[in-house]
Image (cartoon, rainbow, N blue to C red; front, side, top):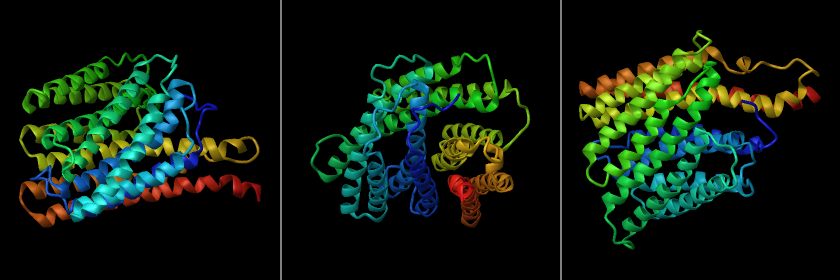
Length: 400
């Protein structure tokens, strides 16, 4: 898949990537404020918003500004005001999360309103991009549905703010359940949809029908219907959606042409293994262990894997490609610091093992060592991204 003339300015995409890495680092101290025995508590919600909204959604939104135009083969509806919206988005996430963790309602409501407006701006411009779309594909369909889920999710999030302020007489737990369902659906559909493009591209796999990905979508929709009747059956449908996605990813990796292992597919393997363990912990009613495995096992490793591929590619395209044939240019693989990448994967795996055993055996010092190992892994990813971003100065250096 090639980039085309619809590519947005890299300062927009890169800005979201930088924000995501910063919130990822901030998620570690926020983690210690969370209490996963009370998953609906404000302190826990504060941590989850730092990680999911600050890190995961920042990376996804940044990537969507690029990938939407490539997948639809038409420009993103508009990028006017997008950089200013990024600032509003970051301020909203930081303020609202701080308000949740500290209990300061002014920050909670002010930050929540700012975040709602920022996501409403993005969600609206995102869904408008699908107007008059002539590119029909499963990936495009998944992205379109994700846009609907994002708007539904943030609308329910705004309802939660009004419920907390006492201005909306609505059942809090009902709104919370569907807020989580729709926002997770946005993330899940993006991952499943984009994976049908990126996984085969990076793995060099061919002749794929993505049947399991389509089943995964169907099971997630079914989970939403079942949520009206009870949570138990919802978990089964959600679990089936996860299993289908993992099986599809493993099938793609099995069919890959390039059998050698690198920092991308090792991270993918770690993330899929963590996904399986997440399901096992859910089945065992160990939600504290399951949430940690989902967050720092699956999502962190999965996103880091693709950052190692996407960030160098975008920077190379915007800043290095114009100098091809004029001077010696780096290969994409040379833009990544390989040893820190592999060491980071090792610390991620060690951190997951130490934390889960620490929680299971009720040894706090062991769990804290696991979190410290994860922090090292996160810092190593950040160092690699800093190194990749140095290549934005490639043209300046060559023109001197």
